[in-house]
Length: 339
Image 1 (cartoon, rainbow, N blue to C red):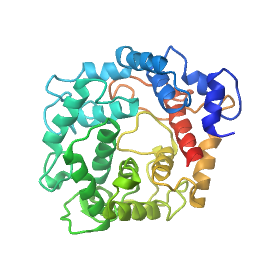
Image 2 (spheres, rainbow, N blue to C red):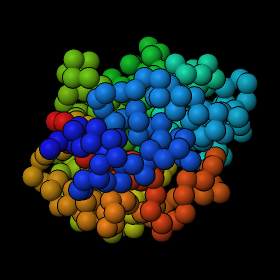
Image 3 (cartoon, rainbow, N blue to C red):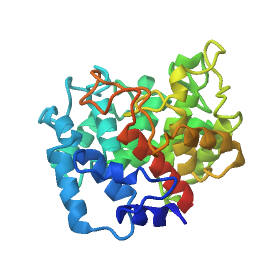
Image 4 (tube, rainbow, N blue to C red):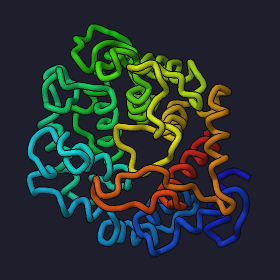
């Protein structure tokens, strides 16, 4: 039975292995994750009236509304400008968070205003996105995150398409000027000792994976292939990627969390590779086995790192079964089942 069919079965209150945590995500006491699960995990059929009601509650009673309540009417959070600081309350992080919560420009005019404000202040003369609005402030993890977030929010600004193309060209080394942070092709990063950065590669591929195949230019297709080969050049579970100090990545790589900002985790690398069509690559098998192994005996995954007290809202207790992390895993497994 496919994941697609399993979701329908669960929605009819029949519990089956291994995805029997879905009814837990659909509980009405957590409107945010309930809406996300109804929208992304339960199909077909979709009960449109129920989905619409869940969407309304996600905004009025869930975390989406809480984040939007802190937005300045102009379209920024905490501090005017390109929105990188203060972490993790400013515009950059608020937009990333909203995208992971399932918000959309079609649902609230504030979100469209915030996307436009961000692009007005972060889009550079090189057509990149940066932490300070100048080309020298461009870095892969930020740019990938923001392309991903704006696309998922439904932003359709022409500047975003230009940024995707610049980002792809910067990966493959096609006539791009590099700076201190984005210092070379193939995800080279000044913050990583000018070596290719796996965190940055994951964010870029997540963004590029949002684009339908028909919308991928020659440069974007090349960048996707280069990124996939870089991330799969070693077993992602072992994470023997280049680092400034020639040590393994931050230990958070092996801990699942929500939300996910500029750090990444082993689950997000699977999300990224799955989004570009490499989810069934044999080199990803150990990673997927590891993800599945972290499921508890009733089908839930734990929150192992978080930003409690460091961003808008709280998303569960660390070390405990977590609906948002479980949603992330089930969404990944569903996507792999469908591709």
